[in-house]
Length: 388
Ligand SMILES: Cc1ncc(COP(=O)(O)O)c(C=O)c1O
Image 1 (cartoon, rainbow, N blue to C red):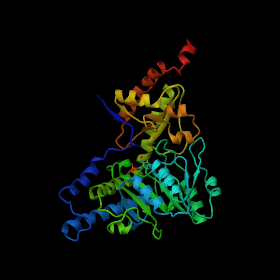
Image 2 (cartoon, rainbow, N blue to C red):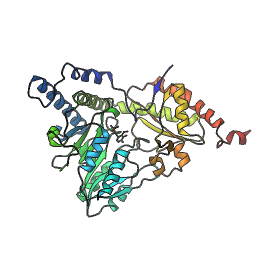
Image 3 (tube, protein in one colour):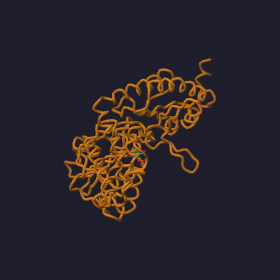
Image 4 (cartoon, protein in one colour):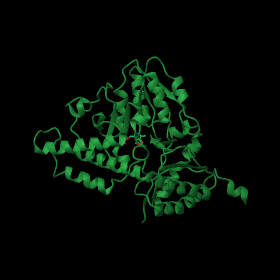
């Protein structure tokens, strides 16, 4: 059975070049990067070379990169590590739970938190950020690209407002890194999170940029790894892979790969919207990362469509979270003003570096039919009856 994977915002396959780069660090070059003997020196050099590569992608110094276990840890470290009780934090209603739940926890531990809302396009208004500033605002954390819609926030403007106010700006760039330029000086952020498995490195590795001179409280205590900012023996194969994927991402961006990916995504989106009536792109028409489209198919359950498409060989997803057996509509789409039933009718298609023209043709050949079939059995869909 043919299988096409269009769920790259959930995770991406490790690219063959990335896998080859990390392979020696499992068995041949297995040293602990803190050891002073040959084996340690070898892996230390590999870790530092990966740090340079990640720094190149982000346009910062290597010493400003901290390797972590992934996007969640990077977000936790950035937020919990930069504030103390009594500080005010500003974030948005469409952040990933790695940010939202960290802020929720800090609110219970004596911080004040403001959740800036978004408009129907999924955008934060930078002026709303300015208006929400307080004398004790320490940190603004607004994501660069949304994981469900791909919509890009006006981070440069928010960065300028934060700098003028003397507030630290952190951006979760987990879904942006490798897809659009992520230069920290241009964004004006003092902290930025990335994750390996969203950019064709493996799961379980990530990085946090923290600008030199920014005081950061570690989350873990132990050895003096990562300049005492993140204790724990480094995940050398993962770090090497992240370095390699960052290098490939930089070359790809310079080569204009993002434009090709956007063409494929647009062909998919336009093809679906042309073939399926009462289908709409959530956040469509906005500045988005080139690989993502989120489409609402009225009168059906997104979850049912995901299952129907999986049976046909196409992997996509909803932004919905399944908690205690009940499917909750995406908090992102609700924040954009969609009623729960429209949020539940939405499905995300996310492409990767490996996605081909044929993959898109395949998706276009199965989606309209699957939607039609679900609508035919949906009590909410009356169009056919009205028309006949
Ligand atoms: C925007 C965003 N932030 C953070 C994360 C968490 O990253 P990780 O899975 O590496 O912990 C994700 C993962 O889906 C994400 O999409």
